[in-house]
Structures are given as C-alpha cells and as structure tokens.
Length: 436
Image (cartoon, rainbow, N blue to C red; front, side):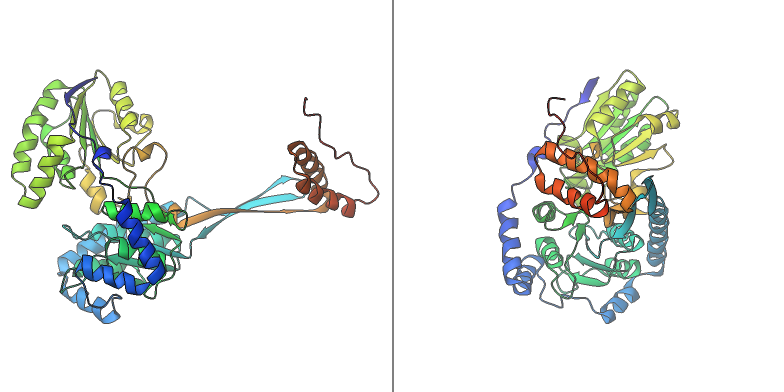
C-alpha cells in the first residue's frame, strides 16, 4: 500500500470544541422552556415569526414549489418509502416453545414520538426531510416532529416545507440548531417529548444529540461526511473524479479517498479533480478545494484483497466500487455505511433519490453500526409465559445459579414458586460447589 496523496489533516482533529456552548443552551432550554428556545431562535436563526408552521403556511409553501420539483420530490419519496417498507417486512413478531410449557417471543414496537432534524444553512436539504420523516412514518411512529432552520423573513424554505408535509410530519418547527433539537427533545411548541432524535446537522446539532443521548435515543454520533472510491484498471477516471468532487463539496473537512490498483488511473484522477473543482460555483468550489487539499487521500494497492482491507479499515460512510467482479466486492466488503456497486450508480443517487437511507455512520462508525432505517425507530422487545410444569425446572436451576452468584433474593423468588406449585416435593436448591 502506497499513498500517492496523503491527508494533511484529519476530520477528527479539526472538530471545534463546542461542548460548553451546547451544554449551556440545553440547560437553559430545559429550565426555561419555550422562552429560552425563542430567544435562541431570535439570536441564532434571526427568526421572530411563528415557531409552529400552520396548515395554511404548509399550503402556501406547496403553491410556491414548481411542478417539476414536486414531481422529483415525490419520485424520491416513493423510492425511499418502498425501500423502508421492504426493510419493515424483514422484522416481525414471533413466538417459540423453548421447552414444553415455556413459550417466549418477540414483538416489534415503534417508538411513540420521533424528532427529525433537517439541515438548512448553505443548502436546502430536501433529501434529509425525505429520509428521516418517511422512514419514521413507515416504521409506524405515532408522532413525528420536524425542525429546520428558517430563513430570515421567509421561514423554512418552501421546498423543504412541502417535503416535510408530503412525508407526514405532524408538527413542523421554524427552528434550527441546538434550539430546534432541544425543543423537540423537551416536547415544546406542541410536540411530544421525543423518544429518538434523527437527522444530520452541523457540529452543534451533533453535539446536542450526543449530550441528549441516554435521556432520549439518537440515530448515531455524526461527524463530517466521508466517501471512498475503490477502482481498478477497468474504471473511468472522469467518473471517479466527478464522484470525489461531488462528495468533497459537502464541506471543507469532508474526506474523500481513492483506493486503486492502477497507478495510471490514480494520476489521471489527481490531475482531473482540481480542474473539476474550478468549474463549481463559488460556495461549492471553496468547500471542495479545501477538502481535496487537506483531507483527500489517494492510495495505491497491489490487489483487490488489499484494497478491500484498506476499505474495511477506513470504514467509510459511502463506499463506491468501480471495478470488475462486483459480486465479489459485495460479498467481501464488511465496513461501510452504504455500498454503491458499479459506475452506473453514484453516491449522489443515494444522497437524493434512489431509496436506501442517506443518514449514515461517519468517522469509522460503520465498523459497528449501519445507517438510519426503520429499525432505528422500533424496539425489539421480548416476552415469556410458562406453565407450572415448565416453571419447575426453571425454578430449580434459577435458585441454584442465583445462590452460586450470591443473589439470595433471586433464589427465593424461585423457591416460593416451587413450594406453592409443588408442595409435596423436596428440592435440593443449594448452590453447586463453586470449585466445580
């Protein structure tokens, strides 16, 4: 493995310490409620209008969205909904007789209330509204609250507002940042206290979710978005360069990586990327240029297996394979948020329209978790029921194991059932010899 381009900085090292700011804001909103949330909305969102979007405002926003954009949003919504419905079908309730008279099972129960954060800022993240609210709706969440940064004098951009309404948000708040997350977490402005908060956001939103975790659930701890392309000598350098630039425009600290077994291909991509970045609009160009200069890497490997090992080690959020024998890669790769196979697809499809969720693990979290899915909004809970006959061997073993562990109260809760259900029998319920 050889680095043809090595990152000068790492995203993890560049994270600003925002904990004190977020902690103060969360405390103020928890203590003062809507008063504090409104104050932060005025100061940070520059918004002094209605916090809760009314039905009339939803209809007015829909009227402002062009017909073609509405059709595109509905197309993406349908794809995400169908994929989420297929996910939902993979989990089910069941029961099994473990031993005669002992039946146990599991149930899938959606959380009662979910909060969905939709970023605003530089970009209007219509796709994030689709990914979060639609998935919660398919999971069966009863109350879905959403918030997004309002624009001064306008509110939530009409396209985002139309999308949130289409996807089924019950309450929509003109509120971004920590104040929006905290409002939903605390059940302010007519929302129900959220059981889980989901959705991407800036470092302040990510830190707020991290600090609230435990009090409520979250989808994942999120850092800057990252993407990797794996390519061999069959790949097209222009496709790869365009894909890397497309992901680098997310932000100045968004890493992009190329892992390849072809030195010539690597050289062509390295030459092409700056040219493509120069053609971007100004705001996109600055982000992509900084990400490519400081965080991008190009890694040359000897074989497909070595490329796969590098990918598993980096555990990228997005992993795009542009190489021969795609089925081999699908079977071999183990650590990624979402996998894109072949040049006919691209990460941008997954970000916007194709169906699988784009809320994905970053910063190597793909080593232990996947992205947002219906499963994040559901609890897999278990139950059990026993006959008196089945309770007998259970109680005997439980009493002995409990005494071995020194948990006499546990043992006695088993003893009493044996004494009550089988009064004519004598049982040896002392702990087994610890030495054995």
